[in-house]
Length: 277
Image (cartoon, rainbow, N blue to C red; front, side, top):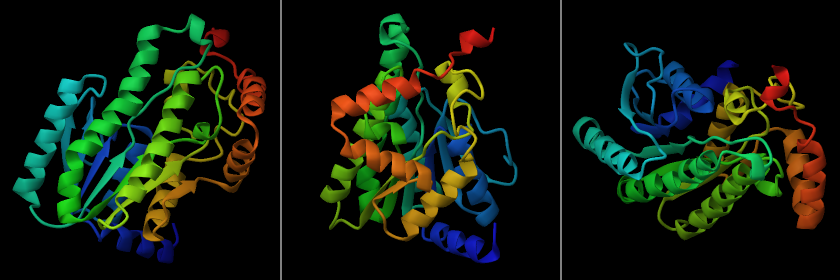
């Protein structure tokens, strides 16, 4: 990271007294915590996830709140604990909420584990809406911003990733609508759409390692830096990487039936994890 880049990212983080990250134990969420630690070690970070990030625990001002996002009761209790931490440790100052938690499942819907498909909706949609809704009054009162992690899958129907793609389309459209509703409130909303990224997402989704074209094209750190730059620039939407921007633009211009047919050909080439055995 260049010195000027580090300075500009640091200035963005310095705008906040506390950061709340969902799903910060791995992937992009963990990279948000890691970068913020490097930029500002005294920043209060609350992580809502099932597991605690196994890094820098003694050096970070990190508060881990265990939470299973597929369980509504745990979400409400987790948010209440986060609010208690904020009121106790940093009762003033702007708050940044990063809704990162989510997962997907690869394969034909008819053959999928229905419980897992319903879990995608619970985690990717309902939990995001609940966390945001419960924290938004505090963010509005204190000032701050919200970063919601969507995906390039949000721009077209995604056969073989049907529930995941539809859940990210919800995140994209809901976040853009929320941004307009909050336009005069002082709360910024940024939607981030990464493409294939080198995280543990594919393994959990049931995709063979290395079978997604461009899957190693971006790292979680890349996505985090792009996100923070976009937040500093006051943007409401950012697609990570110029190739992904081209794909998203092209998919958005196609009739939905054409986009679905094209996506079926491309996504259908991905090898399921079972093929590797």
